[in-house]
Length: 490
Image (cartoon, rainbow, N blue to C red):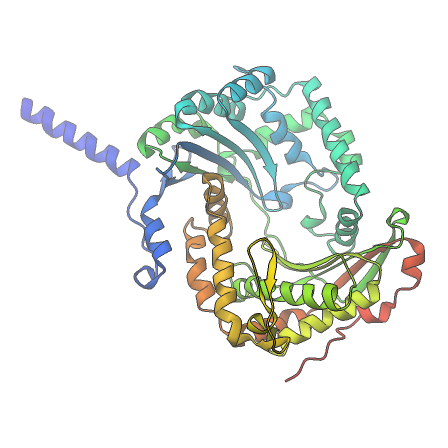
């Protein structure tokens, strides 16, 4: 009899272990990957709750911070036309009181426990986040999960949330650069899910009713859209058991997430008057870049870091044509890049100088770091003689080191790590992809940089928006914005 009981217990333990202990991931190329990737892979594990929600846990035992993000996929592609801000308002309201905890309780407990709960809405994702320390984890998890499972959607709280949202919208539209971005996207994103303002518009927020939020919560914030990322010194088995009692009971509704079609951006120039700018123009150009999952996307991201230094040197330093200037890659389901001139009293000159900087890189040249000096210490520059520009190959390793150092800088906190894992899962379908970044950067060649600069920037179709007062706009040479004006040397 005792033998039978022992065997039964062994079977139960074995079954429980199979459910809570995931198999070791099979990672292609792990043997030859960076030491950073090899060290971090064993720290990441994947689990499933009873309702199918994936839980990704990264073991972090160097501090006492516990971070957990509950992520909803789909983003703007799910939002009905005219309902801008619907998911943002719904998530905000979920943290404004639950069955067990009033909003005053939530604020008090969070303050007493040095903890924070927040709601965020992105382009393709939305998420709720809890950050606390191990000592307060159980209490804060109860507050957090009750907010997710049992929000009360109080009418008075909604009016306060709407008021705050409307103030943010007015502030955004009174800022000339934010106004520039909004007006550009109204033009080039028309008919695309990305035309929806994630935080809402004045009209959509003002018209939003509590019943709409309750319906969205019940029908759309469901298990089939969700995954969870937890970073800290967690006991995974205990965490999964805790979550199964709450979030593991969220129903599956089989919401179909629409595929986000590729943006269609054409060469164009738009202008908008903003009289308060008083002689200063704000310029932004957006264009198509390769998908997030492609090698060229990473190469282009790295290329922008080199181009940004050329832009600062040529547009600002040599031509005094702006206050600041930069490029950026937007790694969403439908990717696009941005070219930005911030505060220019010479918008036409700024555009031609911008193209000149691009042409230098497209011709295989970068700032001559050895000849022109490298920034060090408190912004000082050590100068030496030499040519202004040098072949990319001469400075490539220095730029790679700078990029990789910046990458490491984005891993410093548990929240940073959670954000990286969340992005990897959402856009690559696995939580490990961000760990490959060092290897991807080290594989980039000078020829790769020249190619992507020519293929996507020089030969790209850029839609420009120039925002300024009427007098400044009247002097704009529009022809310079309808073509690339730089001289690429072969």
